[in-house]
Image 1 (cartoon, rainbow, N blue to C red):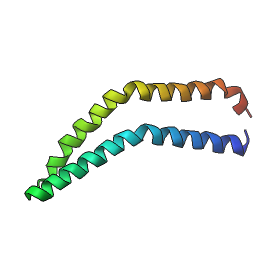
Image 2: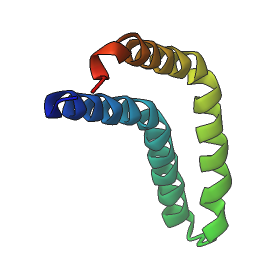
Image 3: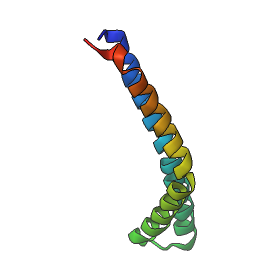
Image 4: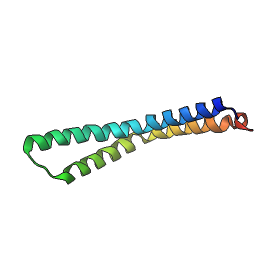
Length: 89
């Protein structure tokens, strides 16, 4: 297995990881920003106030995007296993 194949597999793996985790991190970021603005406007400094909205938001996006996540993972896995003969020593 050449270095170019290993580098390409690593690049593909990092790309699919970023692609799948992006919507979840983005949701948590937007909800955290909105709750932070709300806390600053109302002078409520409760640290646990941000936890539940973020949790429910991320779970909601995860459930909503699950078919897309599975499609991306299955495509990546089938391409990886389909080209397995190229990765032999």
